[in-house]
Image (tube, rainbow, N blue to C red; front, side, top):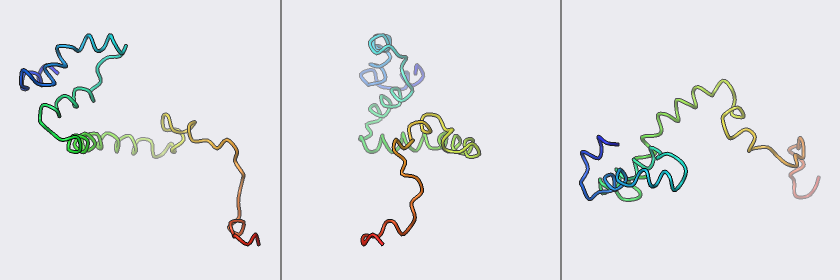
Length: 105
């Protein structure tokens, strides 16, 4: 962040973030995330909300793609966070194609 602050305007968001970083981290109980630094940089670059969102997503996509390739052989249920969260509470079991007909036949 120090490198970016040196490039940023003194009245910009990165400068403010560096000045108040410790106070913010104590307040929320977590260290500053890279997404916060990116958001401040986007403000200093005068990007619109949509421009900043799209740029952030494009910059994150290569990492997400690499994780997907690494996890492919393990199956989607072994991917962190998703497996246990996507379980049916009341699974009706197998359903035949004919059981969806409106006439009940």
